[in-house]
Amino acid sequence: MAEIIDGRAIAESVVVKVIESTAALVSSGITPGLAVVLVGEDPASQVYVNSKGRRAKECGFHSVQHNLDADTTTQDDLLKLVAELNADPAIHGILVQLPLPDHIDADAVIQAISPDKDVDGFHYINVGRLGTGALDEAFVPCTPAGSMLMIERVRGRDLSGLSAVVIGRSNIVGKPMANLLLAANATVTIAHSRTADLPAVARGADILVAAVGRPEMVKGDWVKPGATVIDVGINRIPAPEKGEGKTRLVGDVAFEEAEKIARAITPVPGGVGPMTIAMLMAATVTSAYRAAGKTPPRF
Ligand code: NAD
Image (cartoon, rainbow, N blue to C red; front, side, top):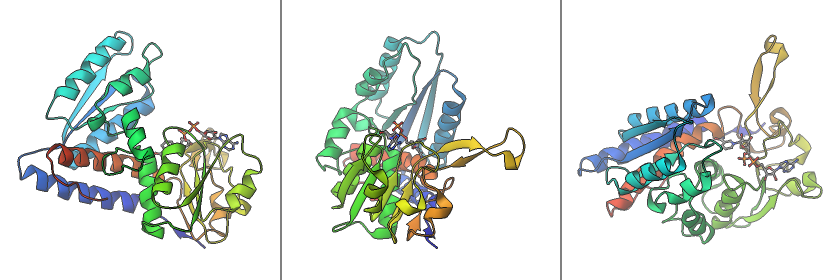
């Protein structure tokens, strides 16, 4: 049976460090500030934004939330707000919750955020910093950053000699994940929907990261014995056994099969999921340290 990598516990340890680092910075007169912008009333986005705000307060941040109306907010309004937040010295992290309504060009808004406050790591400058291995200056998208921290906890910071396979090539998860693994010296393969014989590719992985969005696609016999398996997928599927109309969450990995083969594996829920917001808090305190010319904590 594999070690179950406890995302909740690791996320808590990250938050504890954020709280300590924040307290140290506050005592020198600087409070990390996080601004979260939500346009519209998408229920899932509201849940995310509220938990980000709650966590930010728990960390001792100056936390502001801008709720804008989906029908009356224009792209110019949003760009103006981003410009104000860019110029506000009390704000160290700016997060615009996606998705944005159709009449707003999300990319134009993301690229308007100052790269030095882009705690989501979506600005091209940060994509470039990560791609060139300038990790001390980059902001890295929070989900792959959290996944990487889990891998480090199991296999250490140096992955020399290990082969890593990332299934999924999105800009938010797959590609930054691959770059992080490469920066840690793993030999990296990015697999995706056009990959031939995916099970065989996956079986070559000492570290297997699934970021696809297809429930339980990765079967037990895709897993190399002794591999570390990171399941990024969050999929809601019907659960008639819990009652009519009930659902449950599963990952992209068939957990029960894979845990018999892997050395370590993340569960869903309770794996990568809790890491994402914790890493956002880590990025915000890091940004505040950088703005103050101080060396940020290492997570
Ligand atoms: P995406 O849809 O942008 O990308 C999915 C990727 O999977 C694509 O690159 C595609 O090529 C690949 N893919 C699709 N079908 C495939 C197949 N049959 N075989 C191999 N590859 C295939 O999704 P995303 O934003 O990268 O998210 C992936 C999953 O991670 C989703 O389940 C999402 O809900 C989850 N997610 C979780 C968190 C978190 O906090 N834990 C954050 C972001 C995303």
